[in-house]
Length: 399
Image (cartoon, rainbow, N blue to C red; front, side, top):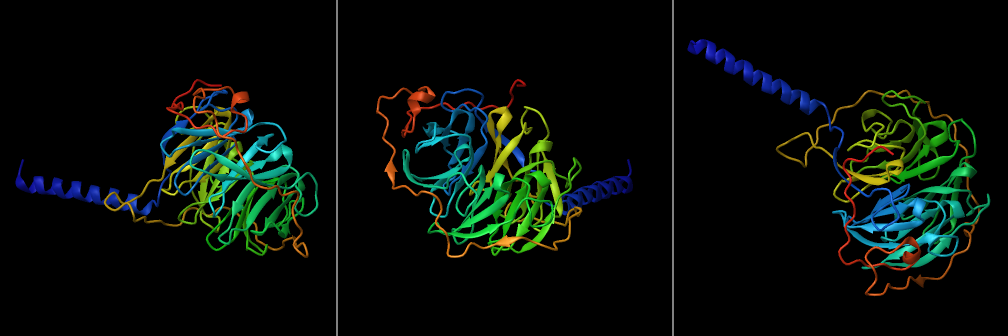
């Protein structure tokens, strides 16, 4: 083979590598890679029954609303079980359909105790929890709820709650006063049909997963509609009963597209970026995903409810030489309605929400407690464990 031909081949190879590099760099960041899963169906510690909520604290610890078992479980970032608390019921530290979790700016854990039409607030300690307060009761007045679900905190530690069956979102100040009631039932912009998820960005803007209307709506901190997007369907950018919405560390929007058994990522303006997941019980697949959360290191956690597990995903970067740099280009725009109206009602005087209870410590478990007690034994107690072994579940038999 002549030297001239060899050089031609070398140049062609280099051009091919360059072309691949250009494609990669212009693709933007892609879907995150599957990392691991925690849990399987059951009632023992580290097992779940229809887990619907997940949250991460600033240390990376992961909290799971084990909805069917009426309890909350806490894990290390590596998936090691730390403690369990709660039982089924309507008293303090008891839950009836705990659907969502959130961690506020002071690292307190909030539980959306949906079936009891209230929120419960807990202070997290090294080995357990302390009950702090209850907010809300059944009703449609300011501070009352009908099946509250999503909870989010803005950069001023105001709390937004998706009051789903009242078809509105309520905003509470740090002192517990009701600052804003947003929306009513309907299909027009600014109205909701069972909102399930709420999130805020670093500007204090509010995003709402308007589940029954199959769309996302974005508002200012004062309740003025900014934009909305989503059409009912299965195509890229279309939604089917979105159950949750989060704002990631880059201020892009991740939607739990539950009816399509996938997650989708959008820009704040509603531009479709990418999706991941499909129906199934294999690694990276979902069956009725409910809530998503992002840890401080960027790990994304998804409560994969019907598969009785929580899945974690690691975001990918596009530059293999510098993981701190990401190159992004606009994705395909999604048809979105034009924001023309909103229904904003401000409650005068800042009404006080339903009953607020004094702090009550959760009793510590006996040092010789069994490592795998039944749910009845777990109760509302703080439950430290010696060497728990949560079930890692990357491949499960179909339910």
